[in-house]
Image 1 (tube, helix red, strand yellow):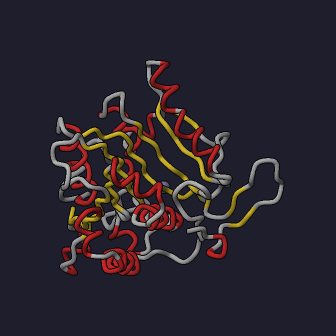
Image 2: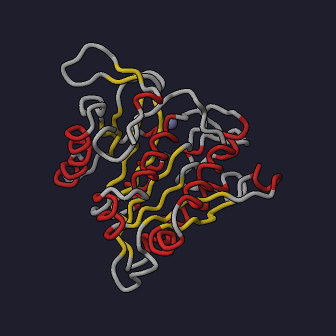
Length: 279
Ligand SMILES: [Zn+2]
């Protein structure tokens, strides 16, 4: 998403569970102690089944100044990725976001001062570890179980949902965005799925963010973006949280092609490669 926050994505180097962890360690160790004290915190959120076997924990990052400004209302952007383990381009998006947010870019500095970013880069680590395309270790598509996740059968999803529900009940937290990052195996470009609401005005506000993305990212397609309330998608994070959170929150699925994008006015697809990565 050139010009916004993330790198373009290279489709094939799979961000497996172990390199993702190494990347996480590198983010922590590369940052200075004073930066970490002010802006960056690694959080242990859950133990997945594989993790129970291997005695490893997983979680996410908090980027911002939450712990420095206890009295100020916390404006939160919550980002998740890799609920579908085979969608490795989602990890490149997520890595680009993290790299940007911990950078010295002036926009990143402003964002860190005003917004808390909660990022869970790998929502289905068991599936990634096992090389599954879509399911968890137990064979569940976790992105159909947001309504009632089980701590036993869907531990990672259960933990993340609990955290979001707690934040939503905290009067000092304003959960403004939830974005779940996926990759699409047949479509080109980046695009979004959003929710449909009874209130027309709320629907119009939901459409603003994809429009801004389209204006700022040459590979983002507004024409491929759609808003729906299909019954089959009721258990997705975007649909469930769109119903749970109040009308000041915006919930989206962000999809990026596995392969390539068409820039506006062009007929030549541009492949997503590591050479095209913009950091
Ligand atoms: Zn997906």
